[in-house]
Length: 335
Image (cartoon, rainbow, N blue to C red; front, top):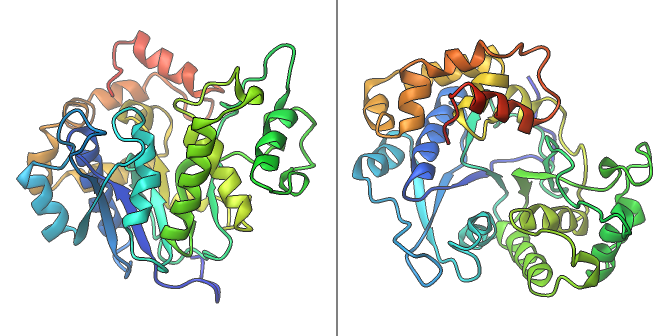
């Protein structure tokens, strides 16, 4: 067990839930949290975007069974927020704008909703004064053009833009112009001492980059990578960085960012799948989750076991896209 240090204390957990896929994933997250971390004493917030100009339809959770389970069975608080800047055109912006609706000054850990809690999060030694984020990441951004600028030029331009020290962000154990030398995170989880302070800076940086990318970013794609471009800058600005919590816990023994159910069966541990099967077994949850085709077919009807049989979990393809392609070729892909 990992004991808390003197900087760690009760904290809130936030995920995003809305009509469709995310509400079922939110339900599974909440159930797995209560199953795997019964001693968690903070609050679980399900941030729900509200209907408005940024959404074509109504994104709120209108399934009464889902709402009832979240609130009454898993003690989640559904908290509304308004998408003023992102919404339907860039739904990844939910995780930015949702932070501004959380209680100011209360430490938080944000998780992408497609995450399964597989162990106790409450005893991780978070130092909420030094933010961090998921390092389970591939070098997806930037993609330097043939004639430049390279990784260093692109990232330095962003640090300079926001008055940040670039050199102190580098991992000098990695070679020059290799993506891992430069601070880069997956936005699947991150934490800090105040969601409003973090969220406002995250919003400011993301909007500045989106609205005025400049010449250096002219050849770069920001959709869907905008949140992951801004995130390392925000974390560095608050004095955080790599390895700020013990390794092997989040994205390890305590949580699994599975992304899709076929991917979970293809590459995750036996323990993760044991948690999934235990959590989804109760009839009260099964009745609702069966409405969602990927869970119905992959988990309950056994397609996941066929996916798992395609792979040697100790010798997986190097890149996630290769795993996806193999699942699709076998006809088992579902999102």
